[in-house]
Amino acid sequence: MSKLARALVLAATVAAMNLAGMAAIAQAQAGDEATPSQQELADRWTYYHQSTQIPPAELKARMQADAAQRALSKRWTYYDHATQMSPVELKAWMQAQDRADTSTEPPAQLPAPVPPVEPSGQPVWLVVSLGGLAAAMALVAGLAVVAARRANRRAQVGPAT
Image (tube, rainbow, N blue to C red):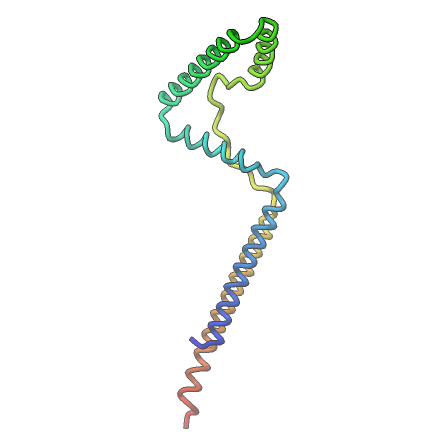
C-alpha cells in the first residue's frame, strides 16, 4: 500500500472517530437536564443487579434481617442515650428521631424495577447522518486505495508497446 493510500485511510479513520466523538458529546450536552446523576445511576444499577441476581425468597429474608438489625440498633441507641441524658434532653432527641424516621422510612415492599433511561431527545437523524458521513469517508478512502494500487501497477508495468 502506498504512502498516499495509508495517509488517506488514516485521515478518514481520524475524521470518522472525530465525528463520532462530536456526536456523542452533542448528544450528552443536549440531554444534560434530564440525565440522572452518577449516584442515581449507581443506585439504579445496584438495585437492578441485586434484585436480578438474588432469588426473591432470599432477597425478602435479607430485607427482613436488615429491618431487624435497624430495629435492634435503634433500641441500643435509645438505651445508650436514655442512660446518659436528662429526661428533657431525651424527649427532644426522641422527637427529632421520630421526624427523621418518618422522612427516611424504607418502603414496605420492593419498588418495581427501574425502567431503562429514556433517550435524551437528541434527533436520531443527526446521529444517523453523521454515521453515514463517516461511512462515505471510509468508502472514499477505500476507493483512493484502489486507485493508488492501479496507478502503482501501471507505473511498474510501463507503457504497452
